[in-house]
Image 1: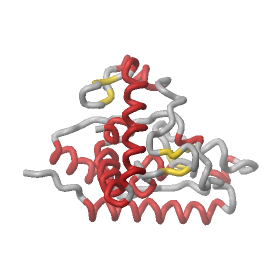
Image 2 (image 1 turned 60 degrees about the vertical axis):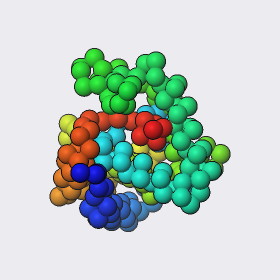
Image 3 (image 1 turned 30 degrees about the horizontal axis):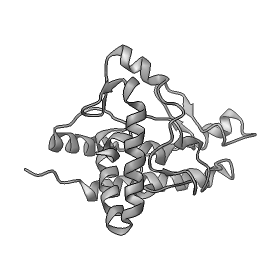
Length: 204
């Protein structure tokens, strides 16, 4: 059976996350300074799941229909990125999947921290696939609960805020864990499981 992207479910997830971000922005009272042209969070690779990957591929296909030259530039940046990262990639180059062994996870912690995202237009300082960006991109900046129980926040934001004030602005992006259910659907449909990085799905 052909793979069908869970469009309605993913759109609902995006709406939930966007609403949570809007609420956090309101409560932050100027502490959240994310804006167009601010790109430090677009430098350095990070893991994305298969739902993120298919959303990116779908977004690139849609961009190719509207603006083929712009889409071609994104794909070329992705291919260039894969070429640069191939030598030390801590995973399977054939699939683009990150390794799960302890040594591979440790290597990934310091892997390609200076590599720009292929979706980033460096001249404009904007994301060419903004509407299709991964969940990590959508939740980076505001205070979000991280593994271990602490609250992570962008170092450029909330200057002058106390820890208590920052905690009061915490964003809960997906309270019903819809993303996990959608991810299981995608993994079952595609047969592809495991994390990757943005360059691989865009370079294919």
